[in-house]
Length: 74
Image (cartoon, rainbow, N blue to C red; front, top):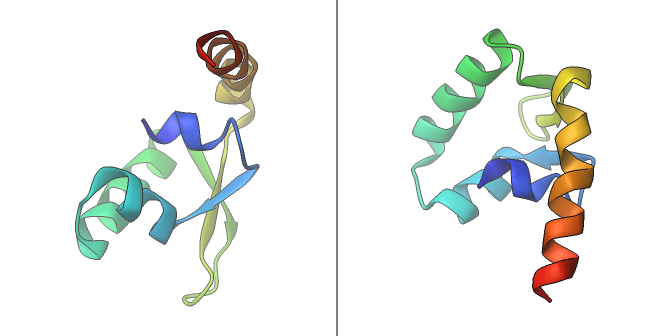
């Protein structure tokens, strides 16, 4: 689900994931920290107020496939 956010944006904020997943702020931050450690996401802005994340180069290739699927469904 979070990967689908990157079909529309290069970077996502914690609030984007909160809205999508319906989880608490704290839980989303914990998940994102794990995803950064796992190499799935990279932090693009480390400020506390505007922290944002982008896909690592390894996973960016999948966004094109998602965009094609989204277009086919519409």
